[in-house]
Length: 618
Image (cartoon, rainbow, N blue to C red; front, side, top):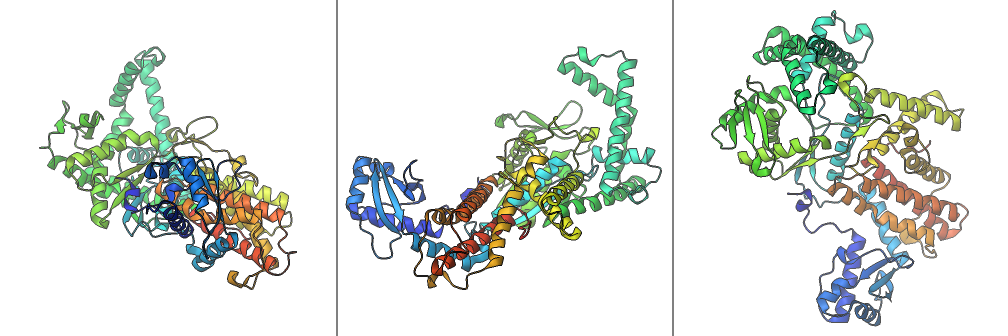
């Protein structure tokens, strides 16, 4: 089941509903048939045609069993604009009926909506209060968050905000992976080589402090591995992939360090007091570091789950379901799920030594989510490299027989890479989220000082961080969700092109105009004003804002909203340069000032949904 299945009748903004109603009347006049017209009948005019909207007559041709060109001509011949009709005139162009709208009437309606709804303009209630949980972030407590986590955090948070804006009741959640073999690796390294140091004693952010020990474990393990291959005269470069994997597996079974980490995990699951105390101490450090990163990114959660609270009952679900035909015991005693009917092979769901793996707790977590919140739908924001795993998880939920198993969705997305390749956290070759924010803020300061050399220190710090975060967020969200992204700091900080600073600068320019003068009139008080071409293009794009939010939400694709905002910014800049605002006279000046105010409100609403600060002064 898809999220759009909860939206009965799709989405229509008020002006489209008016258009659809008027078109229904026009068609009824022509054909004497009451044909149900909806938004799918409407299209952008063909290239080179200066109309506002087009009605391709192909659908009508099937309904009326007539030639589409004849229908377009017939509709023109039968058309007359009634009083208060928003459609002012029509023209036939081949199989298209091109519509020209009453600009002043259209403007009155869209302005009334913007100024009455204010911060809620663009939002809707089509989600009907259905409960949706969006899970994102889901970090491990053995290292700080990195560039990939930033993309996950921002995409998950923005998609949650978008769904809430169209009427879904959204619960933002995270599952913290606070136990397992990776966490034990950093714990073991600290136990061996930590010398009772603390983040405070070393003056290091707490999650970075813990992460350093995870990297140290990997380095020491690599030393063991190199010595193992040397002692056993093994040359990996001469082995095929399967043989190489077999040799690497054999090393891990032999490795004293790897075996110590595995024993520590077993002790943790047995409740060993010393191991549990170390685990609590190191996790506390990491949580403190995570919270600072989330605050900087502007990301929050309604519910946080911890793997340590879930894994045991996950094991219970598996052992209780052993009578199910799809669950079998392997030769080494592991429990295996047969997913061949889904063409997903086999999946180990419980290790032979009785310890759980990720899918064990994920099965239990899925059940807990629906039980705790009586969810209608559950969304997992997880990278595309886990696509096969997510299919396996959903297949197991279905085979167990959970009634909501069809109402889960993998919000997949492409990875973020460095210019020189992929990130590998165990090797310490990552861009940490905190370092990224810090470095981008410093770069923003340099750019601001070039433009505004006399900027006060406090304002410099404030604006630089706001611009840095806007750069990161817009850059991360400006590609299609499933495409991979190469993060380019300099490009993302540009004040030109489709960037965060460009949107902030456009908003600041709007605010600059309104600081000089505002209209003291309402739109209905204006009589003698005309809507020129550049103004008209901007007004039509403002009307498209609601649809851009809906499409972004329903497709989990913030790019739709971003495109809408960039279109608004481009159209405003064209209007700003083409039409004099402050030098205009009478109603025409008031109209233009109202248009600037309306644009400001819409831009602010869009930036807020993206978590971008709308700076009134750059």
